[in-house]
Length: 133
Image (cartoon, rainbow, N blue to C red; front, side, top):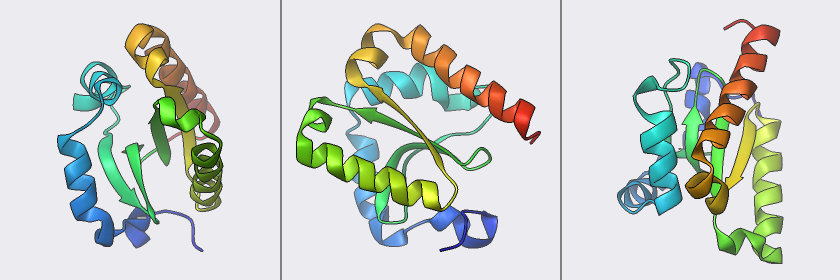
């Protein structure tokens, strides 16, 4: 499969659009906080992030097309073995088409939002140094 790009709409999956719209309306508290305080309105180094973006056969919590970056917020269910295996497969498939995935758990986002902000910022800063955009 080709790397994600504007040419293939970053592997947008229109079949998941309705489900993604539903997810946008009922984001978790952690997702809402990350969106409001870190990722919306180009707060993160001027980059635009979308939320609940259908890509391949998945819905990414947050995605920046310019950086090929997906940010996932994992709740308690992600500790279950079956969900963890699905997360691993999902991450593998998204990586194969060029995405990098950063994962944070609910507790981290809700109780240490500044640390999450700095980790994302630091990651993007390294990307910019290695591959000027």
